[in-house]
Length: 242
Ligand code: URA
Image (tube, rainbow, N blue to C red; front, side, top):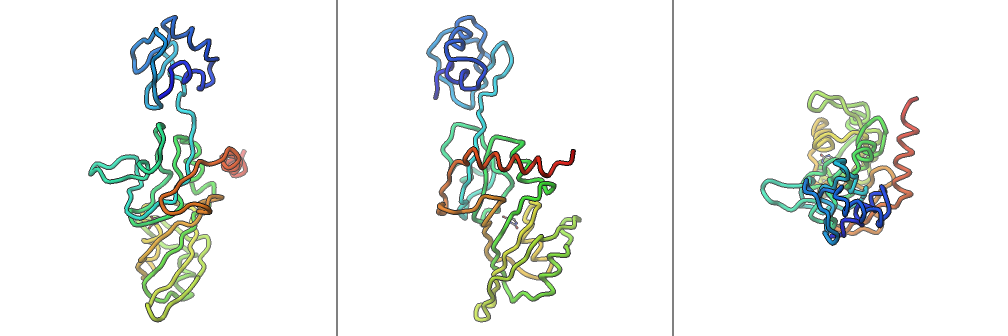
């Protein structure tokens, strides 16, 4: 919780002293109600308006989470199960950028910045999403080539930009494959492997663009640095035709 005048000042529209004056002048509303006395505290979920115009009280925030298994990738769950947002301590209304399945682990970004989320997700910006998949069976060159050439899932053609066989284990009859994609369709990696005849037993996202799991154990998270956010935005510029 923050003092109302501080929240207004933090939005960048004026100084804290000016914000106090705006409140005293009856020009500030919180959740539709005029607040004309100092001392009221608010949080990131309250709607604050000055002269009936909402301030962008939600400063933009960005997190990188090492998603554990057994957590839902959405902002809320109707069955009350734990979500990735529950793992992050913030007053801000954040949401995950794309989805990882309940049983998938690894890199997940969360934010309240829609433009940033779009750059990460939209295939146009060609941001790598790199997965390590443990699959049942021994994969061969033909299946790997097919993943690179493209397969049809849910009536859409999708392809891996890179596929690397990391390991095969004849004893357990499994293969470990690194696969890179640019899209983020529902269950895309599992469906792609299913198309070439393999079941994914375990899936971990190792990297999204410049973001990997360095220093983060399962369930841990950190804020992105300003520099990292700038790099993502500059990627947008370099991928937008003018
Ligand atoms: N592809 C999948 O199949 N599952 C995920 O969680 C992410 C990508």
